[in-house]
Length: 471
Ligand code: URP
Ligand code: ZN
Ligand code: ZN
Image (cartoon, rainbow, N blue to C red; front, side):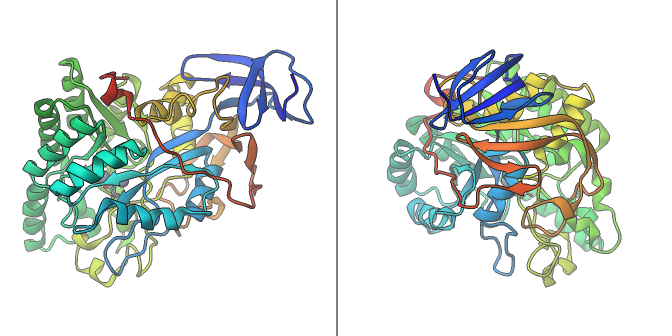
């Protein structure tokens, strides 16, 4: 058999196995995994490199409009380039339905933004902010059929929060349609109550973003979301879990046999509440929700990753520049509640988990692959086309140097943001080549895909909803 490309002598890592072999690629697919493959015009030497499925980041925000004066610091071109340099081959941004808007209207806008600009593959989750009977009864079932098989709901934020009854209606609709529900679990009223009290005391600096939404706020909402999922009998994913108490809610639910999944993110492993305690507005660079918490909460997030309470590790990339159109809007100076929530991380997710996790002996190589790629593909209906090194799968591959040492530096990154919250973090392990369907997108510090070749991916219904499976 002849191949378009052979990757030779690398250590192939999947969620299950680690072994040395050659990999043959033909027509964008993995065609062979064997020793001593030959017959290809292109041979890539992968000696001393890990050969892993490209990262899948199932929680990113790209070109998502926020408040009028605020601009998200990422479009599909810059976002997918940054993701590729970070070792990713698929990203799943959100398509935000504004109140009064139909889901199809919202999707049209995002597809137009993404069209022709993506250097890696992309697939959208829906954000439901207006779950009226038409949306839940007509639009959602049709869109699930068309491959939009997941949606996110918010339990907080003025412009996105759903009432408890609405959450239940969305979950019931998910049960009927097979849509997989992701939940932002923080309680709206408790945050408002605490924010008002802090403001009344003159506590308005970015640091107070943390005390305005302590762990109990997240724990309560997580418990409520899980109870609603139990009542409506649907699997759900609690996204961006930041602390021990919320992690334990998920753990307890799973022990009780409920089909509840969890996601955590880099900010909850390497940042703490102290990062928001900086001079003037510097702390705003770390304002995201839920906020980074304590060292013990970091430890709990590691336990969640190690023991499968969290099946996916995502970036929650949500970048705003440290400028007037981002973190520093005129209103931000009035208090923490006006600082746009979200931080960048699309390019640094894999190096941070590899370095802090694999290099420091907290997780295995196979867990790394599961948490950054395979479980995302399985959860969101892309497996086995994506998320593994297997014959027949798309040749979406990252070559990784496990020994390369880098200090994360904004000057080296490709994202649209003007800062990184991980500035100065020393990491061991770095992606040296990212390949999408057999074509090299990035090599070292060079972008090789001048024409964006990323495709839009329709997804199957999650096996969690269709077969009641869990990871
Ligand atoms: O602060 C965050 N995480 N902003 C992004 C929006 C979200 O809730 O995921
Ligand atoms: Zn969220
Ligand atoms: Zn998010």
